[in-house]
Length: 116
Image (tube, rainbow, N blue to C red):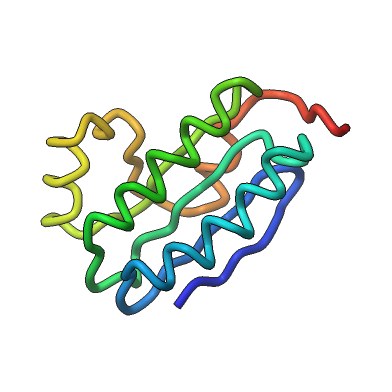
């Protein structure tokens, strides 16, 4: 399950339970449409309530990172489980991991909006 909200040009995606291919496709569609209209300057992935994520979840996060790159957008992964943190470190996303509150992480994201 995913809860998606936008705060000052930053999309906060809170994932809970299990993230499989079907759920990843739904989330991908929602986020990508906002990115390509220039309304997003960053994505915060809150994984504190996520119990399981397969390769589709990693692909979801990596793909949105690539989508944000032309807009100089940032991607931050917040509070993953120790197992997921190892997977993210292995996949090259370790530098995007933060531990703490969503509000403090949102304060780290710079960038500007490029609304079309």
